[in-house]
Length: 137
Length: 261
Image 1 (cartoon, rainbow over the protein chains, first blue to last red):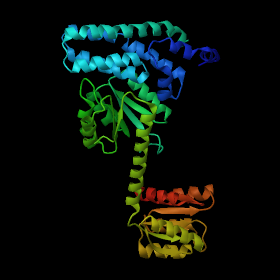
Image 2 (cartoon, rainbow over the protein chains, first blue to last red; image 1 turned 30 degrees about the horizontal axis):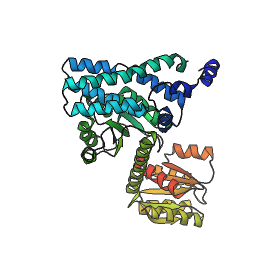
Image 3 (tube, rainbow over the protein chains, first blue to last red; image 1 turned 60 degrees about the horizontal axis):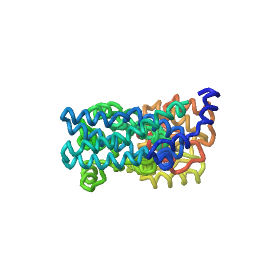
Image 4 (cartoon, chains in turn red, orange; image 1 turned 90 degrees about the vertical axis):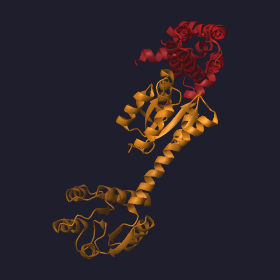
């Protein structure tokens, strides 16, 4: 990292940028996970978006292909990452969806739930895409 | 074993790349070293067999090969590797199963640095205790001869060694007595002061080796004299104890000398 990067990092408004992500409990999560290191935490928020941003679509595709087990596992994994990184709303939605999937709720009844999850995830994705260039400066 | 008592070598097994990266960062912040990562049970097993880590963090719920399925294999094949389950399930039967199969700890998701820290502190303590037990086993029932012209130093060393389970067969006040005692008592190891009248410690060691006596020798010295140390090493000294010494230092040096034997 050269001096210009250091200067850039110092001027990044991490709290403001992280607060623009809906349902992200960034204060608690950054403290509990990384001792309040917001720069490091922001890199995980970006990693989350690039890793899990398309999970709802993947879940739908798994269901469409008849692989309910894969869909359930996607939901489980999304839930774990969301909960750990402080995406509280997404975590709650994914948790209930996973429970229903494991309880054997029929696919047609699950469809609107997956769409709801997709909506929550899409809002998160858009917000992170919006701040990505600023966080990664 | 690991380089320092507190830094553990860890393999992280989780199918979620975000969680793996996070665990790696948390462990790095604690001074531990992630030496491998795997995203499924099968890949994890071959990696663990290869790198033989101190700790494996194992995700319970993975698509191919549940973490808990490879747990008994790790426990059986690698007794020095501790397995920490990291799981989103906090139901008692799952936790009980993990402990029954030999897990050392269980951390529930969502993760926090604190919960990982607590679990790793436990493992660090266990590792220390295991190293201590190993040292005690090495020392217990062993015999030695102590040679030092300073009586209080002989008494101190003899007390320390006896507390470590070592039998002190004889105490010598000079090099000639030391040589006689070693030849007649045939101890498991010898503690020699370097600066002694008659024969000094280096000369005693030299004569022992000339007589083809391979007994492990620890030198006890107050001065870090490079020339003397160089000669001692050339003669095949097992360990050097620089005064002032502590009980821990003495017992660890003796254990090292006996282990190398």
